[in-house]
Length: 435
Ligand code: ATP
Image (cartoon, rainbow, N blue to C red; front, side, top):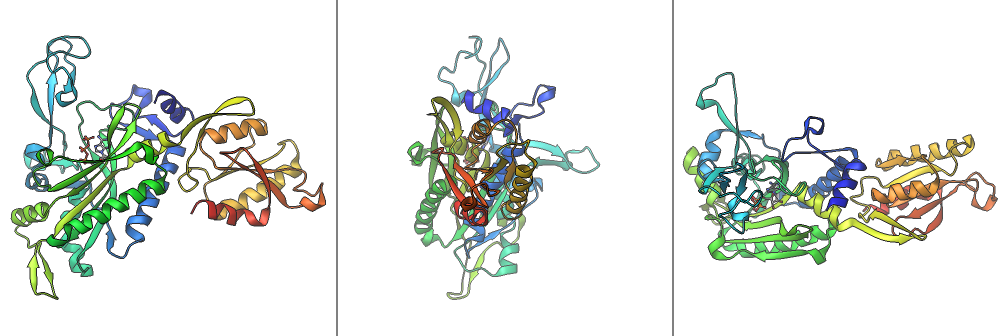
């Protein structure tokens, strides 16, 4: 974990939030390569689960919502974790994460009584200071979809089953943010609310279980390190009749990556009751009016990124030296290829390399120009950030060996082997690799 955190910082993936001021616990900032990787993950998800299906509708709800939303769902009263405080050092802990609930794990002091700590971050909206202005930064994206259920039905008249999908920030005032980007106070989620007839929930649940497994494969999470954990009936949330947690073997233990829950029709029913707006669905074929039931696949963006990086992190030996590289699938790699001239002090090589770079960048934007140091060092640096291909323009490209005119070397990150490809084939080669 330490090695990955250090690589992520050094190479521009992830920085501590507000670092120059000593940081802000539970926040991290994504740097140039981090945001590229994150965007690739989010785009892939959107393509697979929204654009790639004809029963899904995308949306983007506001982060600030009417406080009544959270009163209705029970978040104001009950979105809480159990907290204990050390009577000596005053540090606070989540008591369900402690093995010994009587002694402070930091200083050994006695722990005080357990109380429920609400994790919603509140704020004031509008130019008044009274309590009516209280609003919350959403602790999940899900509710933005439930409150828009009727809007989408009225606009598109979708047939059941259909779903809404959304990607966005959520905020939780976690008692103990920890483990890098695993437990954050500002996080990002990719969530789906899939509406079904009640008697169809088991089929839909199974379909989404399979789809979530296909996603793990697509994004390059090591399947040997993932586990489906069926939540025992006595541990289910009050609204859920079945939940599976997808867990991952992080260096700090086997912990949640994603959740898949059957939420019955709890949310829509509660919102209908509280808002007095009819949120039922009229089935023309049968003339029936019912409140649809919901299957909810829920994915954390940051935990995805962490699991992808941990799955990709590899150390091996190449050319007699140990090397560190990220074995990212080309479809998520932040840089698809680095282009460089063999020697940077030969203007004719630089000119040709610049032309190849410009041509590729138009078609495959995540291309990097890299003429620092010698070629060997460039390869190592690109390996470390997971760039699958390094393209080098040499004298043969210029026709020193006429048979090789307009060909370049393409080095493979994982094997270190090189092949020569015509410049005219590069775009297709990269486009095929990143599919
Ligand atoms: P945990 O038990 O780890 O606190 P949770 O069960 O509260 O998680 P959910 O409410 O199911 O999590 O949230 C859905 C998804 O959002 C999780 O599967 C996870 O990927 C992500 N997530 C939740 N809380 C955090 C957090 N504090 N930091 C980063 N990601 C989070």
